[in-house]
Length: 390
Image (cartoon, rainbow, N blue to C red; front, side, top):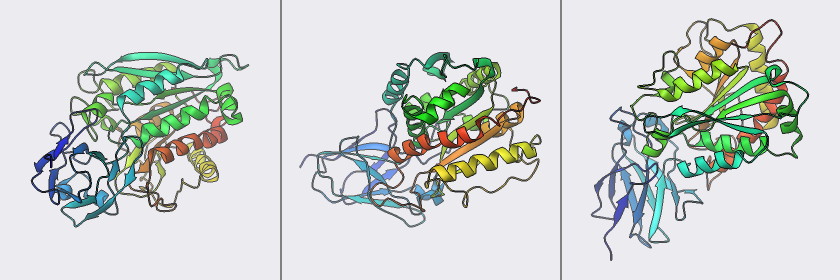
C-alpha cells in the first residue's frame, strides 16, 4: 500500500498535519490566519486511502475561533471537487472527529464548499458578456489581485442612471465564508436573465454595484477572516488604509462616488443553523423610516423564500451601541440608507434540513436569486426626495 499523503498547497488550501501513521487515526490541526488567531477554515486533499476506513481527528477544534460552530456540524468531502457531501462527524468539546471510507485514491475535505479564484474570475467574465454590465477596476490588493466592481443596469431604460436607486452587494469580506460568493453567483444569474420579469424591472429602476469577492487574497491563501496583512476587513470600515485594508478603502471610495440607497453584505455564520439578517438599528442615525424599510424587506424575503427566517439571529442592537467599524453600520450611518448583513449557515438550515448536503453552494445560489424579490419590494421607497444619497 502506498503511504498516505495530505496536501493543501492549492487555492484556498489550509491544514496542518500532526500524524499520518495510522489511517484510523489521522491527526490534524486547523491552521490560523496569518497567526491572527482565526482558526476554523480547512481545505485539503487526502491521497492513498481508497477503500480504507479513515478517521480524521482535528485536535485543536476546541481552541478554534468559534468552537460552538462544531456542535451539529458535519465535514464536507468530495472525490471530484464538483459534488460535495456531508460525512459522519462528531465533536466532544475538544476534538472534532470525521469518518469516511474513500471510494477513490483522492478525496478532498473542506469546512464549506470552496469557491475558487478561478471560478471567481469565470463569474466576472460571464457577467461581463451582458450588455447591462460594466466592469470597473477599483485597484489592487496587497498581493496584486484585481478589485473588480460590476456596475449593472439597463442603460436603455427611461430612467436616467443618476435618478436610479443605487443597490450595493458585497461578499466574502471574510474569505472562508464561501457561501457568500455562491450567493452572489445565484443573484447575478437571475439578475442577468432577460426572461425574468423581476430582474427586468429592477434593472430599469436601479443600478446594482456588486463586488463578488471583497477579499481575494485571503480567499486564495485559505484564510477564514483576514486579508494578506492580517486585517479583518469587516472591522476596517471606519478608517481603512491602502497599507492594511486596501479592499475596503477602494470600495468605500467607489461608494462615495456612486452613492448608496441599499447595501447588502453577504456572510456566513459558524454557529447558527439559520439564514437571517442583521441590521443597523444600533446606529445613532437610525430612524423610523429605516425601521419601516427593514420590516418591509424582511417581510418580502419571508414571502419569497422558505430558507429565510427572522425568529433566530443576533437580536436587536441597543440604540447607540453600533460598532462603526462594521460595513453595515458604517454604510447605513454615512449614507442614511437601508443596510443589512446577510448571514448563512456553515451547518444546515435547521428549518429545512438536507441530510446529504446540509447548507450548500447550490442552496446559497437559490437564496441569492430570491433576494431580488425583497429588493424589488422596497426599491421605490429606498430614498425619499428630501434625503440625499451620501
